[in-house]
Amino acid sequence: MTRLEHLTIAVIGDEDLVNGMRLAGISRYSLIEGNRDIGADVRRSLTELVRDQDIGIIMIQEEYAEHAEDLIASVRGEKSITPVIVEVPSKYGTKHKDIGALYKAYLKHFIGFDIEI
Figure 1 (cartoon, rainbow, N blue to C red):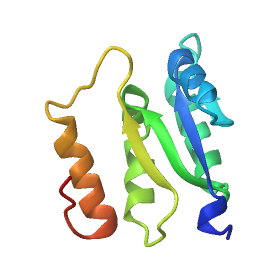
Figure 2 (cartoon, rainbow, N blue to C red; figure 1 turned 45 degrees about the horizontal axis):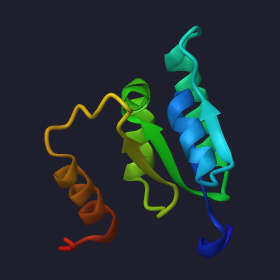
Figure 3 (cartoon, one colour; figure 1 turned 180 degrees about the vertical axis):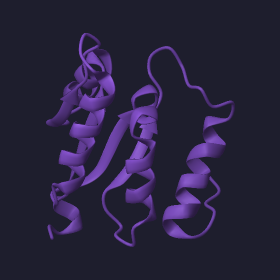
Figure 4 (cartoon, helix red, strand yellow; figure 1 turned 120 degrees about the horizontal axis):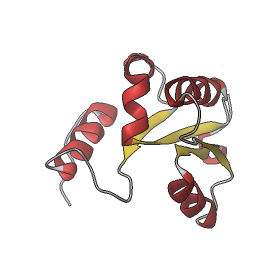
């Protein structure tokens, strides 16, 4: 396994999210385009990225995460600390009423306690 300080971030999303993350320096990405079978593309991309031991964080656009909820749940249920899968909202907003509470719950699950900032 790659040392934690050498792990990279990957993103699965639409053109806007992927291009924004590429500008931020993320080089591993999967662009999901709407003219094909989105569900199959998301599942294939997520499966490939989860298998890559050089990836520590996978950012996935919320509406695409719905197509692979079972895969995401299985990755989160494993004892391994990587990869961490984080759902991010699109430019149209989030489906969650309190996104702060959602991320706080993620942190509590991953590290085992609450963090107050």
